Image (cartoon, rainbow over all chains, first blue to last red; front, side):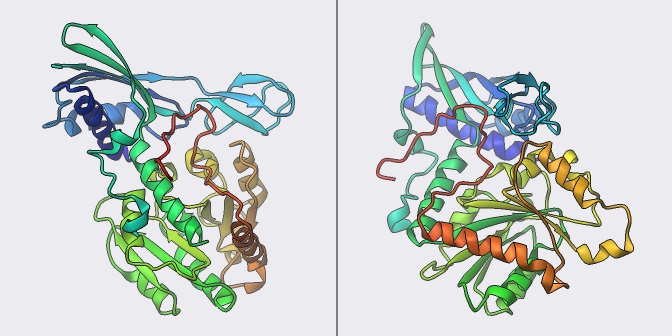
Length: 115
Length: 272
């Protein structure tokens, strides 16, 4: 459970962006967190509420967009949704798949004010 | 290390080496910036510097992960005994408290730096960077980073190493890879340890453990070994020598912690 460390990373990045753009307030932060990222959105929410205090993002709202876990089979080309511990092709049953979507943890967008 | 690694890049000025985010103005005095960077961008940036440092010294860096008590330190002791004459080894130890593990390694005549994290449940690239200040890498072939015992968090943090090795002892349950998908998916090699206990137990199926790893779409080799049975160590030792050789040949190695899902918007450091 390292969501606090992730929050510190987020706050550092949004703080740098705010400074770069000459803004004194971060209003809204949009993240994309997939089911295989190792980050739990509810825990991140709770950690963020604490971590943001005293920063330029202390009143920022956090929007976490989830994604579906999708794998792409290297053997037969099929794409399907999958479970985090069962990354298998639904067509040929093979495990030789790439995760096309679902392991990301991205900062998508930052909304600023007070420029 | 800091003369060349560029660690004067701090969180305050890191944005200067990032490409500008796409900026839109939403209304008077407000702005919206499209970013698309990893939440671990700063850690990854530091990790890239660490890896550059390792590469410049021709060192193969291995991140050793597992639950507490799976036998990471014992594995290192046995590995040093087996390979210490052939390869120059150094170790970075990570624990919440105590220097116990570093002391065990030093008793083998191998340099070891202990990171005590206090409460942090994983190592990150910044901690490893600081440890590297105390560990001259000249002439070192193989650097082991023994992570904090934890099957959850360490898997997410690139330390600037080259390969992830995850241990699972046979007393832990053969379905652990299914229960900890992020960790076992990140493994470039899985070691099933304490195999000398298998003769006393009938409820750990090594084939099942390997199948669970495959179901994570992970082709990593799975070796079964016991540090008390030197004959079982040969696959691990061969694999190590092979990886050191690959590093020497200049093969570019990065660990499986980097997601293959999204095209990550990674900003390279100028000149790095």
